[in-house]
Image (cartoon, rainbow, N blue to C red; front, side, top):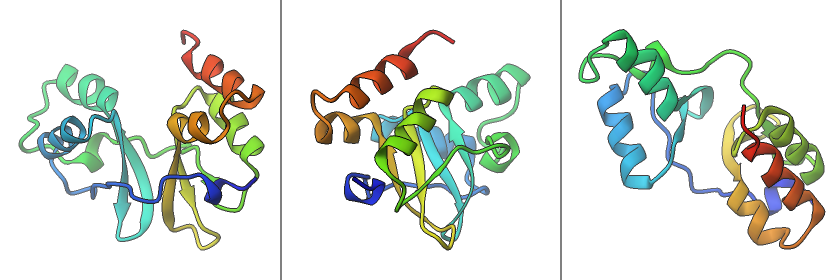
Length: 140
């Protein structure tokens, strides 16, 4: 099975110029802890609730003036390709303890996101789904 068969295609993104306040509001309304950061359709980073708290709030940055691009995670982004095998993608999630994996096409454009929920629904009662959930839930 390929990632593109089960990934979520409707994803919300923010731009690097979005303020932290706006990104946090979007996270709250979507009930998510991470948003892909895109320049047009190119993934340039991800912003997490932890980035906002640890990199911005703890340093006293103004959430109304500070832009996502200033505190987003941009180095060593873990992604998968839409035509990758599910096992390869879930292994990345396990190895890096991540719950959401941005999905790119062969032109490196963001086309979706693979979530634990996608895996749980599609791979119900599978060893891969169970092992991935255990691995990403392990204390850091």
